[in-house]
Image 1 (cartoon, rainbow, N blue to C red):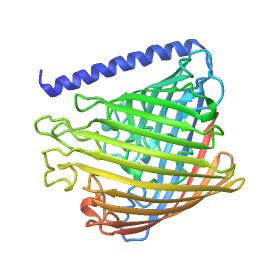
Image 2: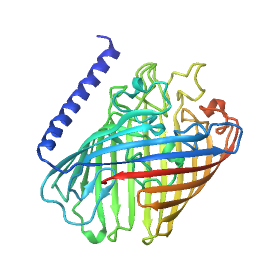
Image 3: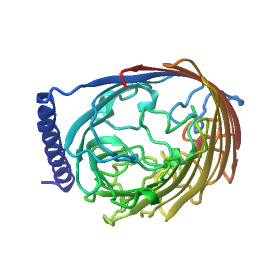
Image 4: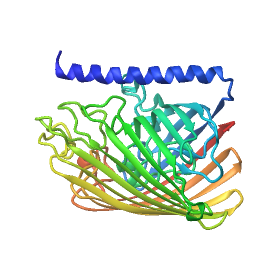
Length: 428
């Protein structure tokens, strides 16, 4: 059997075992007659820049074009569980539940924000479509009364790495546009992640540790022989106003020669099959001053080992990483709910890409400042005007033109204005 086919068969066998495990547990859940919640959100936005190009990347992230965009229409079906800790979130105060519990969550999305969140078969079904339809999250979740409480998720789920994650809740992001840190981090994973609340004196705060094993970055099927490790340490102050999160992802993410479709935004290939390590680390401090004011400070560092295969002339010059590359930066956010239905949001950020590691952006320093107002005319509807300024220092032109801007960009600064409306529905 050819090596590539053998690897694919092994990956499919691993997925079959995962699907079987999930299916058995879903059947058990259905027999328990537990309450099921259905909820979601529909988000529409309009965005414009100040140059002649229609391209708003990277400010718009997955929205490359000016004008009106359907970002997402999400449908979420879940069975919640009783737990005092959540993977990707952390520990909560209060006594631990004494009995185990199991639930599930299935998220279906249609829109432009589904572009890189690989689901079951979106690569073929959504080919050449601007708006994607896929099941971007599907996982079991469970709780066990181990230690001071243990919780886990198994399946396909958005990454825990970074201040902003892809889950349809607010927080994690109070902005329509995304930070550069979000652009450089993984989007989702397929695998398992567990979190343990540590039995430490509550006067010192709440502590938890997390550990996960996944298929890599944004992969449904791994494209090499190695799995990727996630681990985190989280602390919550005794009054629960201050949170500190240290999150990490480490693994060999080299692409098979000629197979790069599921490894964005970083691609590196070794002709000899040498393992190419990629790792990323984030440290996030959040603090709530009172019921109206809160802030977040996020620092990141990531690196990818280079391969020995360069991109051909049909690809941007940085599409395949051929030397060790790293990226790092910091972003800060502040929110003030100055009225019961209105909130001011401010964000400042800097990111440096030393070697042009990102497949769509040139190397250099990126700076951005963002301000918006969130208005809730009703509890279920949010309208959010936003203005953002981006500036770049380096040899390239990351704005204007067309994607990938590493090759086709025309500007080194950009103003963007946007308004988005989000309707939250269901019994969440």
